[in-house]
Length: 228
Ligand SMILES: *Cc1c(COP(=O)(O)O)cnc(C)c1O
Image (cartoon, rainbow, N blue to C red; front, top):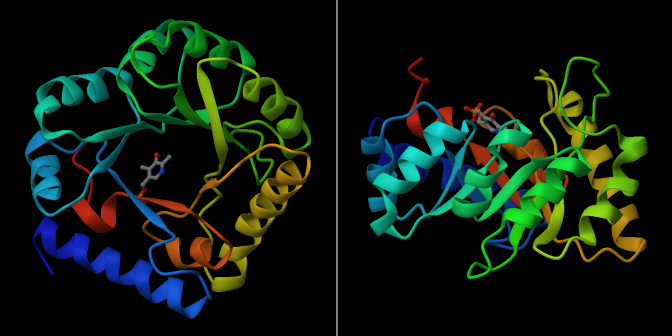
């Protein structure tokens, strides 16, 4: 499997197999192609092979690609850390942001979302390992932030996202995803209408699907190693 189209098909097959094996409905797990640091030509190739949703981590790079590829009708997801002085570019171009971890940033995005666009979809990023060096709100503070974000007029809170520490072995991979899923279900029981669990990457997407992921974010397995 060498071309992007072929690798993309390989990832789709992994998702289909995991859905089947873990009792998930066919087509219930969406694929976000993470194109950070990849050239526009790679995105065009994936788009030509039927991929519609792309994830970017850096504001400037993501906006440049958005502008260059505007005619293709792609859907852009922001999945990197966001500073408050760069919120406007995200509010104006992206369909969804997966990395809300502070109310201040969420408020700015809501204020800056252009009136002619639908509300900006978003997920709360949870530091599910509670690692001190990592982004995301702690599990203990997730509910408070989620309720506050759900009240913002120009955002639409869809769910939760996490990036667990890389782990070897099936059980070790599943554990943090199971914790995120439990938190997600708690919030749903509290009345938040959440329907998106953004978890799983190239190395652990099967474990994420087993634990209820509705969107996996896959870069390397589609595009190959990232050029830096
Ligand atoms: C880079 C990145 C990915 C993709 O990781 P791969 O291991 O290349 O699949 C997914 N999610 C986030 C937030 C990322 O930064």
